[in-house]
Length: 178
Image (cartoon, rainbow, N blue to C red; front, side, top):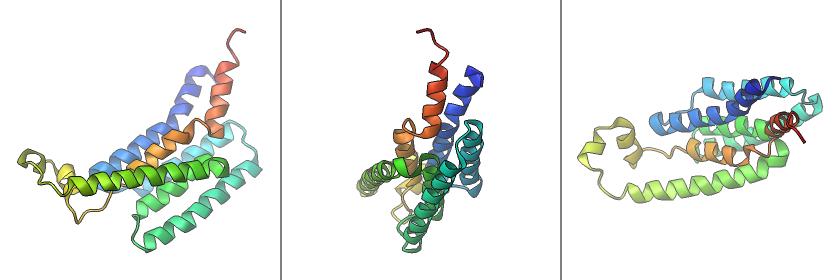
């Protein structure tokens, strides 16, 4: 794969995470279409790098396990449906090897985000900011927490240890002079 395409491939996951975070921040929604793009992006790049089918299967098993637990959290009202799907789709990229660090980061970042929002919601919002729909919605105590921000940030924190990232970094370094 040409170096320029390798760079594009390396950016697929970060760009999708940025879209998920910004979508959740601005609309309090993570669309099914975006989650499907995260899933499709994994499969396309897994095939491009020649990831063994057994490894793809393990990544699928990991994502399925996380989906079961995340939908239980959704059923209890602890997270939104988009968050439940996004955490599983993100875990698909990371597999069992990075699942625990990802989920720990997501929990810590999500907890911090929740505490910050709860504190900010105690103070009145200046009138200028009330006119901005997404800020007013974010400040509303009846509104949820855009947990997709924490999920995306956690994914970005561990992405460099993923098989796909490591493959493209190793390939880009193999053409350099020694």
